[in-house]
Length: 194
Image 1: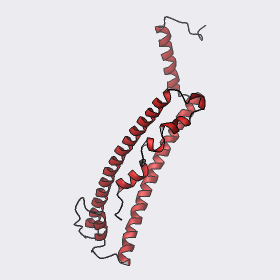
Image 2 (image 1 turned 180 degrees about the horizontal axis):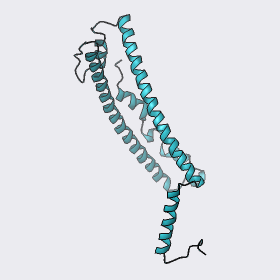
Image 3 (image 1 turned 180 degrees about the vertical axis):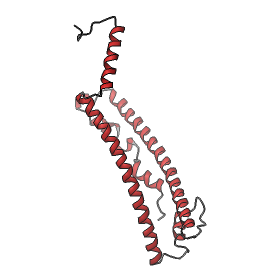
Image 4 (image 1 turned 90 degrees about the horizontal axis):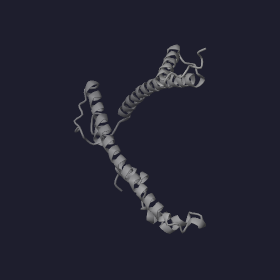
């Protein structure tokens, strides 16, 4: 059996295998309504609208799958480039894999030969992978901390808004705006003025 591609996996998992009439006929659709409205002439229109909306969603999913496949290929190329740079800068092993080369070929060449991994090469590659994962985890935790701080500031601001605890300049700015609105509206008296 050939290896499944990203496109075939996403298509199989995200797209329906059959059209709407094969899954739900107009008669079955009509039977879902209460018996008092089953003869309503709008039901076939609703069914056609459902078919149309479903077709639009399926088209949107197909486009998203195509976009994701392209993005996956570019990610694969970036991994290859990064590994190539690490190998050239670190151990001096040159990787002659094509820029768009096969991932398996690249991974086989990372241990310095076309031979299967040895215990030492596997441990070295696993250690490198662990360091990469730890660095990425640290970076993501820092990013998450920054996002959390921003969210806390936003929530605090919303809490102040909810309970009316405004900073003085904001309150004065609002009052000045209201006075300007009153003047524009034709001199409606301020209720707080004596």
